[in-house]
Amino acid sequence: MVNTGDTAWVLVSAALVLLMTPGLALFYGGMVRAKSVLNMMMMSFGALALISVLWVLYGYSIAFGDDVGAGLLGDPSQYFGLTGLMEDATGEEGGLPAMAFVGFQAVFAIITVALISGAIADRARFGAWMVFAGVWATIVYFPVAHWVFDFSLDEHVGGWIANNLAAIDFAGGTAVHINAGAAGLALALVLGKRRGFGREAMRPHNLPLVMIGAGLLWFGWFGFNAGSALAANNTASVAWVNTLVATAAATLGWLLVEKVRDGHSTSLGAASGVVAGLVAITPACSAVSPVGAIILGAIAGVLCALAVGLKYTLGYDDSLDVVGVHLVGGLWGTIAIGFLADPDAPAGVESVFFGGSADQLWRQVVGAAAVLVFSFVLTLVIGWVIQKTMGFRIPEEDEITGIDTVVHAESGYDFASLGSSGSTAPLAGQARATSTDSLARNTERTLA
Image 1 (cartoon, rainbow, N blue to C red):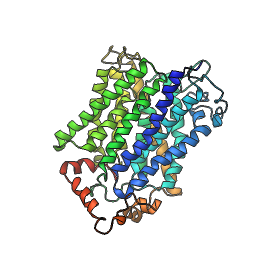
Image 2 (tube, rainbow, N blue to C red):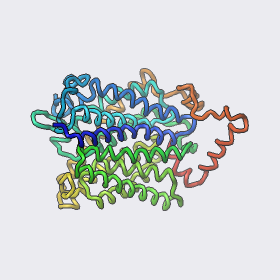
Image 3 (cartoon, rainbow, N blue to C red):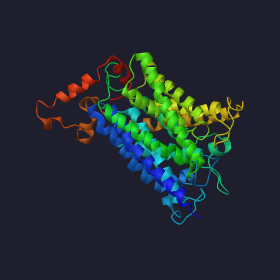
Image 4 (cartoon, rainbow, N blue to C red):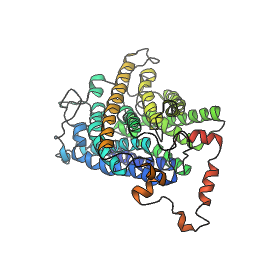
């Protein structure tokens, strides 16, 4: 029997998560320089288009087909082209049509791939990016989704992290954020640094776009986290509240770091804190109490605000801080379950500080480390092969000219149509608006 209320909630949640990818495009697009905004947004939209098709053809089957090897991979042929699922009125999740679950999981795959693009802003060929997106989703994301999200049920055998390890990842701290963050680091190493990295201030060209994008991400994330309950129930309600307060606390934590370190709290910091909190609470939103969510979020805001500077210390060019926010935030949120999980929360597990047990902690660490290593190594190989064959990075002269003009034959802002007097004033105004010392320090970490 189909539960129409739960089905409606899951479909609405899927639509909310889908909105997150255009929101991410705005967030990333505002953070790069004006000459790169269209390319940055196109990488998100390209992922949306490509992964949607691959998910239907074989992605869902790899992720949620019957296991064919020690919890590592689903049967790619079982649901090829979603064969047989249109007639499944109850689905594996009980009360949900199978296609509702297919759609909900599809949008997770889409945004995971899109997240990676922020690490290579300004310097990646669009065609090479699309090849990478398809190969990476096939070899890395679909199998990891099987590990983390595919639970064994009746005669169906699922993935090893969800079932054998029994690590908790309610909505994708490992499969989405650690996965994308590790991949972003690997690609940043393959493509190398942007021209002028560490010498020139690469400030966001449009902070209102960044704020709008962060707002859309926060809005859509309620579908991401609360929707992962797969029902309109108490678990969804707890996840919703925890998502709200953890994100708010992370924003405050990031702004506090900026105020103490730089003397000013910035709009870019607020937007970045929002995303850091959303990332960190994703795996833990069913396992912690609201007070635990506040603690988790506040620490995430501080950790991620500090972590974004690692690229200057360690010498890798992660353009939009995919590593500092998604990898670090995902690691903290996943491992923090071992310290902050409350047995009264829906997940019902004890932790070091609530119950005195370290049993869940080691499970969280193993799950996080496995996804990190798997994603980093395979992404390094995939990126290197693409770079050596078709070429992943654009030529230096094209980077100087601007990737929008060279690759897409378009410009995000047609200042020429305003006349000679109007073509430079807006740019001068933007430069003045972002010239404070604190913003310069904060935004050099950001993009092209």
